[in-house]
Length: 112
Image 1 (cartoon, rainbow, N blue to C red):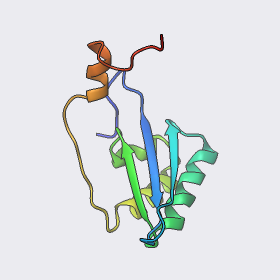
Image 2: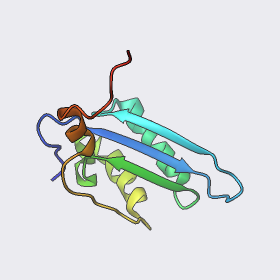
Image 3: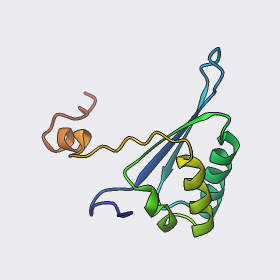
Image 4: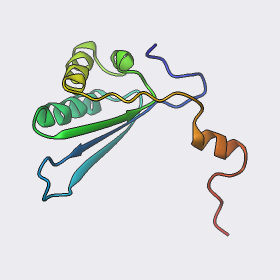
């Protein structure tokens, strides 16, 4: 369940948003997977610092149960635990719109 379909690159984007409604700041972290030990530690620290203080949005084509394939099991467990506690999980299904556009020639056009 944690695996990504063959030929699909694993990706993870994390957005941490300031909880203060007067501030519109956010921090974005994009990771190419699998992550290095330093990146895994950094992701955990980001999630831990935001835990129960700020909103965190994670976008990935990898199920949380597969995070232990990307980083050490203890870090993966702690990270997922903090991400999913009080979480609203939105699971999408179906084909990738970007992949469909790219394969039908309707994606990004080269600069002239």
